[in-house]
Length: 199
Image (cartoon, rainbow, N blue to C red):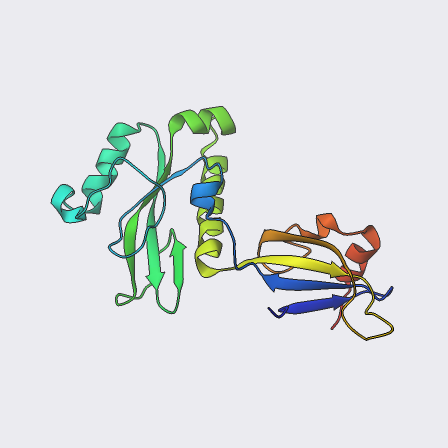
């Protein structure tokens, strides 16, 4: 596996960024505040839910009927449609992709009124930000936009081989270390160098 990016530091150490090829599904492995109710013939998308059916049309007469059922079962919930793009990979969004051939609605994501009150003091805007963040995170998972790093010591003087592995960590969403949390694992001087780094 080759790094997609290498940042070299003044002391000779280097930060190598890799695709995380063994990342966890955030809808199955993480605690989420929202619920994704999705239907797809070929992919297991979203969360397990009680609205599942072998054939969407055999139970629901369109998306409006499902949305009405979700609101009835979860009064006061904040709800948004979900759209999937299936073209050279998968991508999910609360906004239509605009391609009638490779994209379309696959369900809804909602957050219950109890969660809005308990976690956001009833603030719908904060709840909506949470909802959008969960969709964004899941989109990154579906697109494989998850990374890890290896921090290496100086290359071996004798053989020229790669330096000793000083630290490593995986499961970061997005590849830029100053934005995805990788920098929290680095010494302050490395973080400062990354801020002005030029390859």
